[in-house]
Image 1: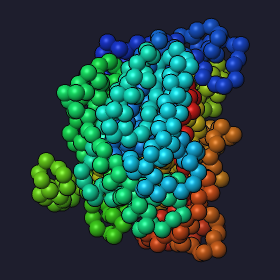
Image 2: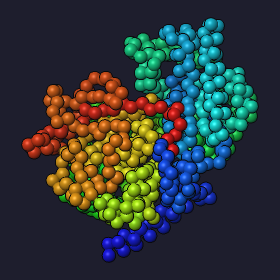
Image 3: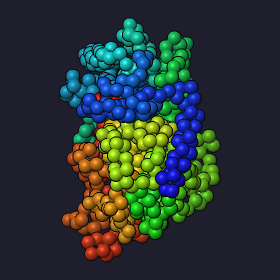
Image 4: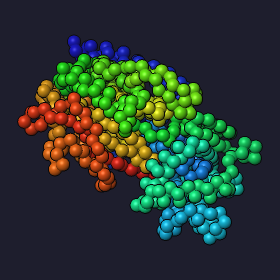
Length: 609
């Protein structure tokens, strides 16, 4: 009877997924046979055949399949334009990351500043950027030409739909014409992207947050660096010419003004359209995302995957702690003042129940540069928004089974999933590649919104979001640790993303039954039966709260995967949460910044899939 019920639900969900795909893609809902994307080829064929082997019967959307299955799409060269500290590098790196992860497009950023630092290893004061300094002008031109030569070689290396980003100021009409001439003989769509910012506050924040932490000013006095960089901006302002609608109307360009006004000229095509859509969501203000799995569900406790079960008492206790954490941390800024924030969940019962204790008071807030001119307006704090896109990866006919049951009853499916967790699709269910496709609009919204967002979701879904912002490859995404009872704060930056994990409830009194295919992690947190961690497949350690600390409990320390040293901040205490220590006694819990990770990612590498 259980299998019959699961099969009925599978048929219903399968049709629902197909309708969602058809409605979102329309005429471009094209499919290809799925193949395993592992690095090591295998001669075996099957439903998920290895590259070079027999094609299989498991379709994959073209949007996420990668260049190896695509036709010879047009190549695109994106040329950044604008004064320093306007967000050009931020825009170029965020755009490159998006195209690489969500559309599996080969993308490489050519930053002329990197070439300048390699060629001119000495310090470069603002006078180096004086356009009357003939020697400096020659050196900077040499750097521009070297970057252009490398970009041209990259664009012509393979016959695929790759994208190159030329990250430089390109502040004069003469320089932009030179760029267009260099690329004129190539079969490449050239699109200029000008970033304009007149907000002095944002410019100042960008200088201090990005430029002072960059390679030009590393380890130097901040105030002196700001003065020097301001003078550098003035040197460029003296010769700056914005893109002109008349004299440069024959070029393809996008002009972004204060992340509010967009002018588009002579831009056509599917990929350029996706680029425009993403650019219209980007902004350079600081963002904070909080992701959390739902509290323990009945299916978690029994080791079953999928389903739409209710929370257990343990899960309900976590929901109450999450509400307190939301009130004391998510809806507060660094000074403790209340700020507007948002709440997203999936449509499933376990995520909605986890968010049920979060209050939704109506507050008066004002935003600068908004449609109301900075006047106060009513805001529903943490208004609950439910997204179908955030529903857990659907296990198809395996929905409601434990992994032990799948291994025993469906050994072939079990082996296929072990071979490639990323591309494997459950029979009449979904794969991680399908999830990547339906999370595309979610990421657009996350990039657009300026308020902190709490996303209460599922492990498979949050792994994709986490991997995207942490700069991980697609293959790594299905193996990332997103444990129960933990809030992960992500703060995206120009050159990476900072992560802070906070454990609100250390142990479960009703652990997952190991005999049912579940288990508990070494940190005492129960792993969901869905999408277990596979040892050795993740390059990152699972952050856990240390059992003891020389600084004592309640004093967070910081470290990073790249051994980034930083000062210990003043902890933000979360007094109402409790933690079981070795003896099972309750102790005060603070925000766990003990494993803050500051990971930088290299968007110049080719896509993993």
